[in-house]
Image 1: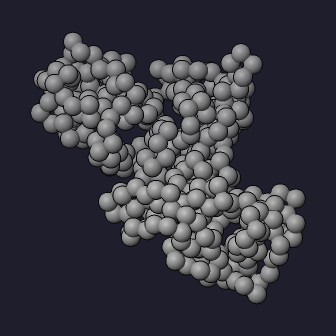
Image 2 (image 1 turned 90 degrees about the vertical axis):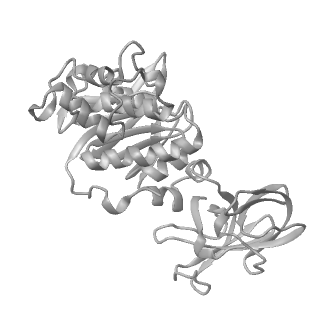
Image 3 (image 1 turned 180 degrees about the vertical axis):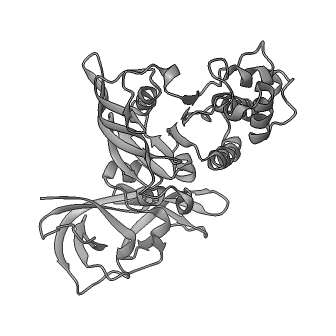
Length: 369
């Protein structure tokens, strides 16, 4: 998930900053007091369900919309009132927007209508460079409709990159493609971004795509930021129940704390909380800084791959309802007292089974008193 090992460090300069940005339409906040800082050379993704404000946020950064309040800065300079053509950003839209009456090369060169090619090269040389970069060398004289959807999207990306923008913005660029093509194209997009070291802000509703391609992910909900972190952190340590349920499959449980102590440590040495969930006592690792006391209501999650079929300790007994063979693994749907539980396992199972987990593999998402 992601490529955090070569991501820009925390001391990298800030390329784009949003400070308390709000965008209001007819009394509704499409973006609600969003503050974030995007580093130079970072691949930063906004992800969330439809209507969460991610595309509006991208349009605000591009300059297609103006914030109702708050400020947007590029390299420390406020650009909130600067028009799109003066922001030096490249934008790739969902629908490609290629001109059918132009050749591939002419489409790429169209990105240079308002700017000279960077580096002092000619327009023709810049077009050749970019088509080679996006693995489309030799296609300059072809018509756009002679290319596949993935190739057309790469042409659109080459056009956006033509003037050498400081920031590349991509608005759900692969949503119209089939799953296999999306997987291939996202690898290519990441490779292009890394080779150019260009600050990239990407919008998608696809959680898997966000985890796979990003240095950091901002999960949005109802116009606000729910969590901002590297992909592994978002997946393994979701900040809220919403993130836990939105990003990938998860099992969320809630119950009353009956005790917290260090006499039953998790595998990694953390203290555990004993939680009464539907009459069953389950032990859950508690991070340092989380206060949980007897009587508190505690919500925690366990990923399907961390549940172990046949484990009797720290376990529930549930009934197999259905199973989906996915090739490398089988996703099993269990029923436990009316609650669905998902398990991933290499082996087929049936009937009533025990399913348990190590307390260290549970993650607390909320404690309510």
